[in-house]
Image (cartoon, rainbow, N blue to C red; front, side, top):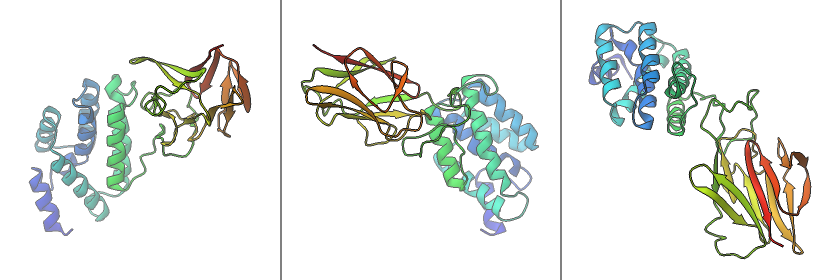
Length: 278
């Protein structure tokens, strides 16, 4: 992209070479809008960054517009593209700014749950940060973990405070609906109430991976393939599948164990219960 194309792109967004300092704020505003509205805390962080960046009066008018009305997807994409070109052209900005924008995006998203970064990051905004980082060729350095990531246990994993709350999905519910079994895995969902799966045959697999019968998202202490419950000769068992942080039955870490009923099963921060009839 030559100088004329760069200036034409800035002009399409209502910017000049003098007001370009508002450009890094456009991706941050898009992250703030990802959940459908801009929280007061997010607005405060963006306005503070605008002052820190030295955005001029014309640029501040644009920032005010973006905070009042969400930028169109086309404008957001154009802004990301221009920012990358601006930083990689070796001119008035350098590539370090791209890393800074992704880090500031984390700060903006955390501010949604509390003033100046005391909240956790909403799932939609987490996805927006991932898309932003990917578009700009920057590692998003997430401390939360998606199902397809390798097992990663951050130092502050116990806090679980920098990403979306863990989510449990009983993916095998439809496949196993109506299948008779004396044993069931129970989970008490805050919104949906009691969820359960029958334990039959080869059983049910649990972990962060997409192919599990029970998938647990955004819990850094759960491995991609963590454990399984199965039936053998009319007896029921749990088997740890070499998980990083272990499978726990009634507070005791196990490699494998027969289940007799009324056990508490813990993976990462999630609690399940085993019910066996008879």
